Every structure is written in C-alpha cells, then in structure tokens.
Length: 445
Image (cartoon, rainbow, N blue to C red):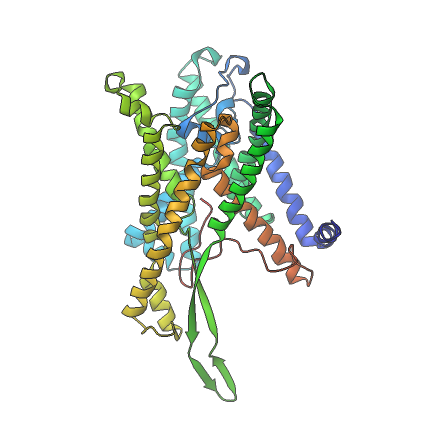
C-alpha cells in the first residue's frame, strides 16, 4: 500500500504527466456525457431498451450503451475503425498506398486524411441505416424524411467529434485515444452487468452468494490467462556486425526481435463475428430460409455456433498475421543494418526461419484466441447472466487488457524518464510495442 501511495505521489509531482492525465479524464468525461444525450426528435420514453445480441451487442458495448439509447454518439468510433482497417488493407494491396507508407511523416498525414474522409462516407451510410432499422417508429417525434436527414447529420457529426476527442487524447492526453474511448465504453457496461448478475443470483433459485463468488474467481483467472496471451512473445536473437571507425567501436551487440504469440490482436474475432452475423440476418430478412442449422448458428450458446466461430477465428488469425507481419521485409531490414540471426544465413534462409517461427507460435496463439472468444458462451452455459458473461472473454476483454497495459506502460515511461521507480517492484510493463524492426505497429483494434 505504501508503494502505491508513493507511486501516485510521484505521478502527481510530474507536471506534464499530471496535465496529460487530467486532460484525458476531461475528454473522457465529455464523451460519457454525450453518450446520454438522445438524438433530437426522439422520445426516450418510447425507446425499446432491450439487450442487443450478436454484432449489434458488440457495437452497443463499444459505444458505451449509446447505441441502444439512440444517443448522438450512437455509432461511436466504429466507422473510424472500419475506415482504418480498409486503409490498412489498401496499404498492403494497392501500390499508391504502399508508396504513402514509405514516405514517412508526409505519407502518414495523407493516409490519416484519407482515413478521415472515408470515415465520413462510412458514417453517412451507417447513420441512415441506423435510423431506419434501430429507432422504432413510435419514438420518432419528427416526420420522415426530415427526421432521417436530421438524425444522419447529428450522428455523423457525433462520430467525427468522438474521432476528434480520440486524437486530442492521443495528442494532449496519455495516448491511445481511440482505444481509451472504446475501453471506457466497455467499462461503462460493467456495473450494469454486475448488478444484473447480483440480482439474478440473489433471487429465489439463483444459487446465492457462493456461485457469485466463484464467478468472480473464475473471471480473475480468465483475465490472467488473457494477459498471458496478450503479453506472450518469442524472442529471436539478432547479432549486429562489429564496426571500428577510428578509435570507436560500433555495433557488435545482440538484440532481439519480439514476435508476439497473438500478433493479430482482436481483428480475427471482429472478422469472425461479422461473418457469424450473416446467418442471423438471413433468418430475419428471409424467413423461408430458416432451418435448424441456421437457427443454431444464430444462437451464440449453441455448439454449432461456437465450433464455427472458433474455426473462423483460427483461420483469420493466420490470415491477418500473414498480412501484418512480413518476414521478408524484416530479413531485408536486418541485412541492411548489418544484422543476422546466429546460425542462420542472411537473406532467404533468414526469411524462411522467421516465417517458420511465426507459423509455429501463431498456431497455439490462434487456439488460445479461439478459447478466449468462446468463454462468454461457456459462462452462459454455467448460468451467468448474458450482460456479465460478455466480460469473460471475446473482444471486450482483449481490448480492456491491451489498453490497460498500454496505458500503464505510458505512465511508467514518464516515471522512468524522470528517475522515479516504475509501477512494479520488479521488471517492466510491456505494452504492444512494434512486432519487430521494420514491421508494423500492433494496434488494439
């Protein structure tokens, strides 16, 4: 306890760090207030506040509950994330975007501008779809098409404002602005989930406090398991050639390439959930196509759903890792800098070795990611309330763990720069640093 108080005191002593933390809290407070402001022309009393399932439930969690409230921030930062993913994939397949990636700061600014314009276009489309499908006709106090036009404009402005808040948190705050906004939205759903589980267990036939205590213990171990997956790395030693210039020696040191066990992050789960949403949509829009198998794929607690979901996650993990990590680029960068892996010839042999290591560590990483993704369904089968079961795994838990570790690493770096002790007595907190020299930076989303 004394160590914690000393660390908090040291954090408060650093003017720059204190200002950044206060700015972050202020921006997040503005975001949470906006999540409770209902769209103009909507009657809040007439809204159907029912729990969303599937992809809509994921969107509602990312938006901090504003999706189900029909708030001005209902779409949250999901359009921006979608645009970022599209631009990221274009950077792999389209020569023009590949050229921008190699132009340094100027290219990054152009890609950021393209991402913003694409976010605007995606938000306009999604806002119209949201107004048409998610707001009940009885809650509309303005006649169409004026209501649709007004709401689409407000939702688009709300998403762009949230995007601006995220950039300000990154610039003026503690960093990881978009990730922090998503994390706050997820945490905002935790009290209601715990409350629902509490009343469920304390009701007649609910089991009482003992099962509730066991659930929290299980959640604790699930979080530890998730941290192991997020932090797991395979270090490849790299030796750099020794150079002597005059009386000084350069190089000759050994460094490591940290290849992450889960280099793909949460993207495989997001892609897989998007595909698993298709059977639910087909059963809703085309009742004639309903069958027992299609119905089971629409139920996230069924065996068919979870087996299919796990297989998709494993496949997408390999696919996204192959896109994100480029062994050939890493091999070329090492060769240019005079580095080599001991016992491996530079060039093609190094490329083949790194690719082999990535394949070996991605397989267990993919299986572990699939297990984490289906934990909420397993928790539901043991009687855990659906609202609380979401925190036992999946995208929400991975984002929470990743963002918290990144934020702690940012704070620790400020402390160590000013010769204070870090947040831990031994070792240092490892965030999601770049996968390797010359490789892409791993993002939370």
